[in-house]
Image (cartoon, rainbow, N blue to C red; front, side, top):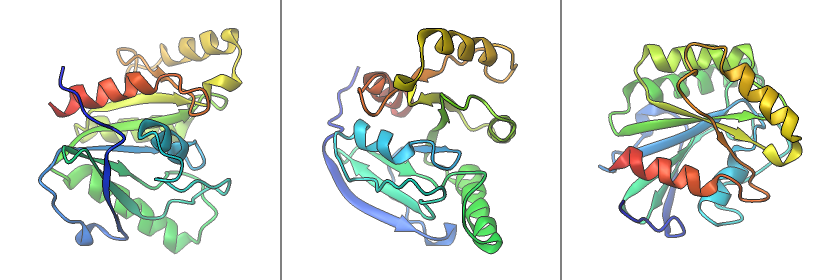
Length: 196
């Protein structure tokens, strides 16, 4: 397996609309999920940084697409969250359009990492989003965040729920915690396997 230095974070770029996006000619992996799922914290853990992705307790904090060049080999993409966010209706529509355009038109996209708050479980909006990815043939990996806040029994119950849905029955979720670094190595391996 090739090795990549996830700590070697190069330039950071942000875009408000799809037409602004640059083409870097590198494979891309993106991260998204419901608002306030812990996406920025997880990206910080993956890159072993504290503030590469800004965090907030307010839902809808990320309103742009952020590109991070990693080790000059690939792009890690921080997408806005989907679903509930404390922003205007017009801004919500703009963010939805931005997500839709990136996920369906971006030729360099290799995989979408869909983050689910382990305490909240899989919601209808997540299922709808996964169906959208499946329909548009976007490879995805489910990542369960904040797993340190669950008991072992809660983890087992969560897995049982995942096994009931046809879209994800063959996709074993990665259990993660940005706090304890659980699952970070697994995500890095998954990224590498997706871009080589």
